[in-house]
Length: 104
View (cartoon, one colour):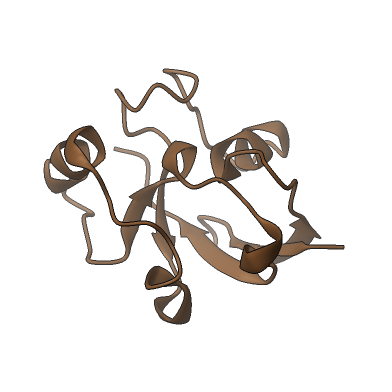
């Protein structure tokens, strides 16, 4: 099993099966951890904002244009911020740890 570690908005850690080839957003939305994902993964709403645990940041592709712009507008933006719709889970990301950012 390729594990995905999720810290919800209450600070509780959940270990779930990551779905290879599927965005992290889809897993978060399906597990009902409060990720609205209003735009359905089109990188246009920032309702799937997460913070990636420090050791994993460099293992992800860099943020691109729209994602970077949306994130920088958020009050909860951090260097570890990502839109989970833009992070596709792979076997290489087994153990990836993310925290769900506050709803804005």
